[in-house]
Image 1 (cartoon, rainbow over the protein chains, first blue to last red):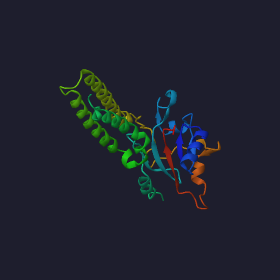
Image 2 (tube, each protein chain N blue to C red):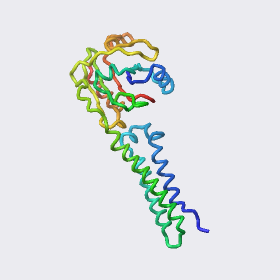
Image 3 (cartoon, rainbow over the protein chains, first blue to last red):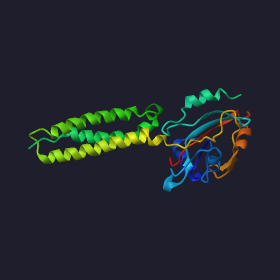
Image 4 (cartoon, rainbow over the protein chains, first blue to last red):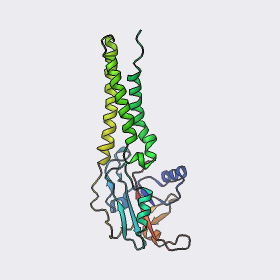
Length: 90
Length: 148
């Protein structure tokens, strides 16, 4: 699932445009983003706080099995990296 | 009548194209996004053209105006190149340390957020919800900057 500060409406538009069918969650008040210590201060529109890019693979018991915290926000996890990590799931 | 200094203007145009082609084109593929080599190649060609244009403008037979124009255009192009290098290699690395982010083997904090239909969804719910009749193997959380 994808998580950002975007509103449900904005995420719906994005899903329609890009053809995404997985879950998109809205975190405008940075609840989850703060819990995961991913707040990037003042980077959004009008100096709002947003999430820094990060990916976590969670197993069915809720344990983190793999994560990627990029050092450069132009660089994100590639699909093949995630598929490789998915082999770690029991 | 002197002919137009095409090296100079093409160099300028190419530096603009090199800058804009990252967000508009090359960002779409990981191979050109993770390291912006395609843009750096375009900037290198632009720099060569600008150098040729400057040399031409400063040839003894050129008028003073052409030297002034060439200096201005080359400075502007150089600013575009420096700005790109700054954004690509400096500003994009300004990220919070996120030392409190859950580590591998740690429990992922649960959360409940609205999905695109304004229905509240929680991580624990998604992890226990069967997919196509089979128990879920896990979940991939992708945090992103938004505003796409």
